[in-house]
Image 1: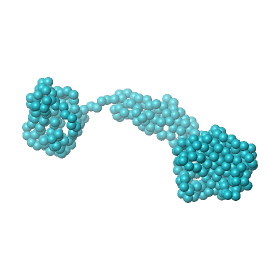
Image 2: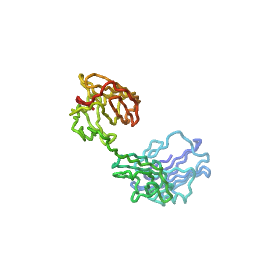
Image 3: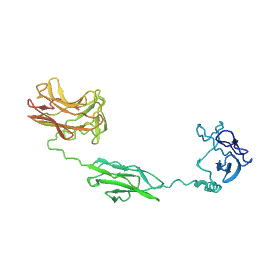
Image 4: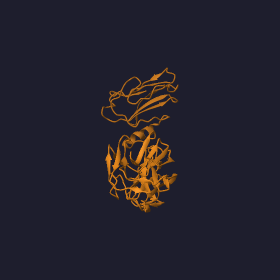
Length: 376
């Protein structure tokens, strides 16, 4: 047990292994002044039977010590307090415990290092957090980062397909306005004075926009508004509809308790039409209406997600309530994006999920869409 007494001297108490002998040498008075830094070391050698106390690299006091060894206790080791309930007022730094008795020269060397202190273990870099693959839209921003351990300072060199990227020498690589030509495999070489480490490679994929197929009559992009980007079927956000990060840019955000977008259509489509969109459901325990155009006197079109298991749609002919129903299995995951497309012709109604045909049904009568106000 070590105890700093302040003035007039320094005392170090130690009890032997069997608890029958206590040694408590005390340094001379006047060696310690308040507000000054001191290096303190206590060296116990139960083989030679000595207890030595060093102050600022010099032996200050020593006393005979039992050869029974140091008594083992079950109490916690404390800094800033002694086992006798005495508390230190001041600062303590660079506390170290060794498994052997240090020599006089070793203690003098530690004290002599001053503010440089004891050398830490010098280690080459080791990458502990690897860069992650990125998929971004054309014109977007891609970011790769790495975390390494070892002896600092580090230098960084990012590479694409094994070729150094000029000026990319930070722990984070940011690529702006990415284009298809920027796609590739990215890694970084982390170096210090002791060596280098290369991260794992992370792929950058750039999604390129697709030209809309012929026949596009309305497009609600949800870029912080409900406007029709190509036609005149403007929408109105109602009952708390907001916007959030979407699959492409922004998206409509609905609360599931009354929010929707209403669209007053200026015309109708009959015989054949397609509705397609991205959707990220946040519930799997209810019927979720997605897109519809229906009134009690006019059944046109309706798409729903049913209790996390399937897509259900009703199709009317403009006069009858329901003339055709279609269902496609979709055991969706809450919080994931899915692409849904419903393609209707005079003979068939097809549902696509993530670009693949999921269901097809024959249409009973000539289908009709969007004569009445539509909702999203």
